[in-house]
Image (cartoon, rainbow, N blue to C red):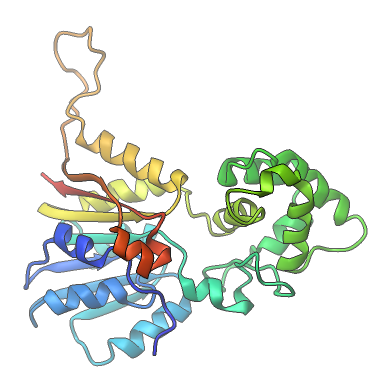
Length: 311
C-alpha cells in the first residue's frame, strides 16, 4: 500500500479539469500519483498524461503505480521547467488541462530521513524535495548570517518572533552546530513567549515552513511558471491549482487576476495603449474542502483550489 497521502479535493479537481477522454494533461506535482490516477481513469487509450515531480521517491512510486501504461510520461524535474519541456516535445499550447498541487507530501513529512518535521527529534535537518541538490536546511541555519535567517523566517514563515529566533540560532551555533530537527525545534520553542504558544499549533511550524520554502525555492518564479503553464494550454483548456498556505495562494490569486485583466492602462487614458488582452476566465475564484473531507483527510484543512480556463 502506498504511503502517500490521499489526493486533496479530488472530486473538485476533476470537476474543474473537465477531463476529455482523448485529451492531453499535465500533472505538475505527481507525488504518489493520486491526482494522476484520477485523471487516467477518465482518459481513453488515446489520451495522454505527463507527470512531473522533482522528488525521485515520487517518480519511483509513479513508475510502480503506472507501470506498463503507455499513456503516461514521467519527468523527474521541478514543474517550473515544464514549459520548456513542453516546447521541446511539441506540446506547448496543446494541453487540455494542468493540475498543480503545491503542498508538501505526507510521505516526505513522515519519512524521518527527509528532515521536514518539527516532531522528528534526532532527525537530520535536510528538507530537500530533490535530494540531488546540495542546499539543505542544516546549511542555512549553520552558515547563513543572522540577518539572512531572520529574513527567511519573516518572509516565508510570517513569524512575528523571527528576530528572536534568528538571534537564538546564532547564539546556539556558537557552541555547537545545529544538526537535527529536534535541536532547531527546541531553539524556536525557547524563542517564543509562553503566552503565544497556547494557540496556532506547534511553535516551530512557521520556522520549519520558512526553511522548507527557502531550501526548495518553492516561491521562486512561481508567478512566471503559472503564467507560462496557462499559455501551454489550448483555448478552452483548464488549469487547477491547489495551495496550502497564504504566500503561495497570494501568488496564484494575483497571477490569475492579472491574466484575467483585459487592460492595465491608466484609467485616465481614453484609449488603450498597453495592448494587453485577457487570457483566462475564472472557473472558480476559490473553493475549499468539504467538512467531511477535512475530517477524513486533515491535509485538506488548509487547502484552497483555484481554477481558470484559457480563452
